[in-house]
Image 1 (cartoon, rainbow, N blue to C red):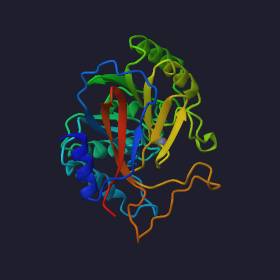
Image 2: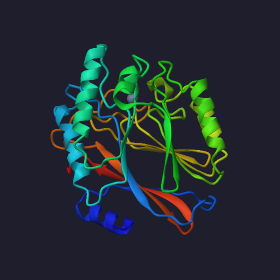
Image 3: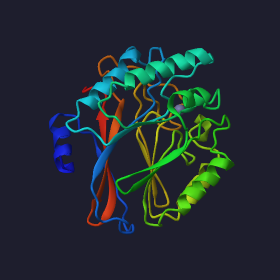
Image 4: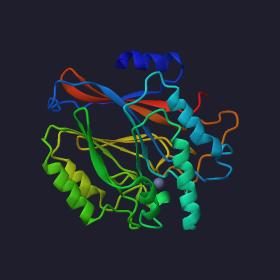
Length: 297
Ligand SMILES: [Zn+2]
């Protein structure tokens, strides 16, 4: 299925959200013009184990999201969950129970290649120990069809930072990349200071952005803030995803970071996941983002 057919299907099914092209005006030509386009999905902030008025269907959300993915006309090349898979708990046993349930439900995905990164709800109270038992490394890289993917962990350190060791690892990994390589970064928290008063920042995120700056084609996808947000730092685009459990207010728009109230007239509003198509159009790399609802509203 070509990208146009895929977008048309979503539109006809009444699912297509706003299409956002993370274009790169003036960017260098893609290193590999041979280009085979592909697409992947970003799911985020499922908070398995959460209970409360902001979502009376809390236990129904993750299964609904999995069903929505499985109903897509063409399976994505891979799915990545960008953190806060589970809702925080002080009890290490309960944390593992939630991670186990989460993993079991996600096992119903028709997609075999599923990747995970932790959020602070999963990892900040035990430095990522339980997460690693279930899902392995918390930062890693992989390559897929001409794109270099870098997964960063800015949550396992309770100081909300990447830390010197991970920054050195990142610098080392980037050294092997051409300056015009197509690079996609995943993290849980934003790497820039979106709203530090609400923990919407990474203490040493600017150091990671500095390391990425010499590369012409870099895009960052993150979660944590439970809403879509698009921001540039220089030529690097940062896109946050919606949540699967409840929406949060716009940065600094209210005194507190209180979840938006559940609206029985429009349930599931503001919740969803995203499709990202990696294309080379007119010789230039582009990522075409389409926001999809968990459930058609
Ligand atoms: Zn978070």
